[in-house]
Structure formats: structure tokens, C-alpha cells
Image 1 (cartoon, rainbow, N blue to C red):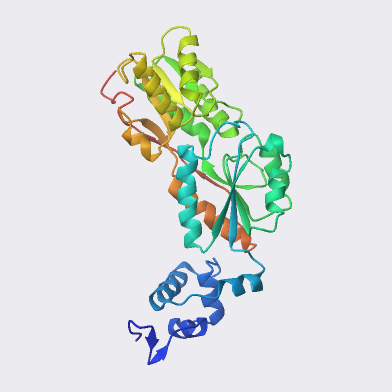
Image 2 (spheres, rainbow, N blue to C red):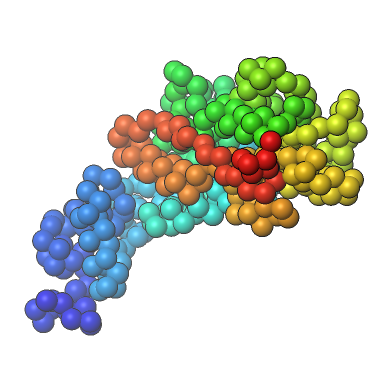
Length: 348
């Protein structure tokens, strides 16, 4: 057995060959396991990584990259074609980026982050995928760039997108059923007595458009009033825009569905400033279930996207595509998280 000083039967464990001997596998299997290859089954891969950590064995990363013609870098790009004034510091982006960074680091990758303004550069995605600087690319959100992503996916395989899935599309997507999420939010408020709904969000991006479509479906079925107010996501304008939406709405609103938790939080602030009581006079449902959603006053009812699971799924699919394996899209089911911005089920 090995001791705490990295020895096995009196011999130092310093190389991949030594580690292979201890693990009872080939050197190639050790190399692939440490590189995170899905060709090695998870149990063996985890066992080899654990042995490597315990014995302080680290492969020569530069030599490995040169032999494999890989960079060890993953490009992560956020396209903002529909909302140029939105920032990477947006809480949703930061939450997903953090989860992706954890997963990519565990897989041995570095990250190259880019914020793209597509209308300033029509070949924004071609520039990243064709740079030779990354082994694969993760795109956070499709914005209004679905056709561009589809075009690039024809010739560039190692790419996975967080976003909405359309039947028959080429690019691999991980995301939530946004239409279902919108319908769940609307049905929740309608069941709790709301009859005049307001949807806040700019629907130029496909994900938000699908959330509104789900809300519309529920409103039509219940034969109740629904108003849509597009909303910019820049920090400088969002509260003022919500104020304008509330002012412009003909008659009182008793249910607000926000396209994101950030919008819902801004709506809470504006409603409080106007003297509205949430949920007594107005109920609110957000979308995302960011960590901050449970910390608002009152805590925010929201539609949960499993961001951590989604990040794992993105990285797993990207690694498989880098290895030229098949990896299909994943559409996750959203979940209603009921908190205090909507009435409890006992209130009519």
C-alpha cells in the first residue's frame, strides 16, 4: 500500500506510469482520466484523480497540450444583440458563469470570457470559433442570434449553448422549457385570484419571448387581462422603466410576471416606493431562482432554472463534443418556487 509520502512498495510515485501501476490501468487511461475524457468511465476517472491528488502527481500540461494540439481553454461568450446595455455583472450571468467556472476548472480547463455586441460585428461567433485559441465554445443565451449560431454549428462541432431549444435545430442547447415556465407563473397567480396580469420583459430574445408565450396561453385559457411591457435590462434604466409600465397600465395591476428575478426585484422596489403592499395588493413571480431571490423583502416567488445542474450538463456535453462524441440537447423542466410575494394557497 502507498504511504503518505507518495510511495508504493518503497518506490516513489512521480510519473503517470507510476500512477498507472498503482491504479492497475494503462498510462493512456491515466492520461485520459486526468484530462477529463468521457472515454474513461466515471468511477475509474474519479479513482485515478483521487490517487493523483493524494500523491501529488501532475502531468506536464504544456507537453500534453502540444501533443493533443489542444489549448486547454474554453471560450465563454455572452451575445447581447437584443440588449446592448446589459452588463456581464447581471446576477443571472454571474451565477451561471460561477457554476460553469467550477465545472470547467474541475475538468482542467481555463476560461476565455467575451461579451459580444453582434450588430457591431456580424462575424462575432466565427471570430471566436475560428481563432484557434479555444478547444470549444460555450454561448450563454441566444439573444436574437439564433440564425448565426445555427450557421456556425454547421461546421463547428465543439459548441454548447445555454438557451431555448427548437425542434430540428443544429446547435446543442441546454436550457429550460421557457414556455412552460411562463405558464406555471401565470397559472400560479391566476389560482390565487389575480385577474389583471402584467408581463415585464423585452421579448426580442427567444427565451423571454417563449416565457411570454406561456403566460399568454394561461391568460387566454382563464379569459383574463394581460398586458406586456418591454423592459430594458440596463441597471440605469430598469426601475424607471418599471415605473413607466405601472403608470401606463390602464387600471390597477394585481399580478406581475417578470422575465427575470432582476426585473422582479426592481419591481418590488418600485411598488414599495409607490405604497403598494406585496402580496396584498399586487403579487409578483420572477424567473431564474437566483440566490438573491430568497433574500428580498418579502422573499420572491419565482420559476427555478436549475443553473448548477445546467452548468454540469453544458460542460459534460462540450467535453463529449470535443472528443467527437454525440451529445444531444437537454431541455430541463422549470419548477415553481413559492415564497411570500404571492399569496399562500389558503388565500382566495
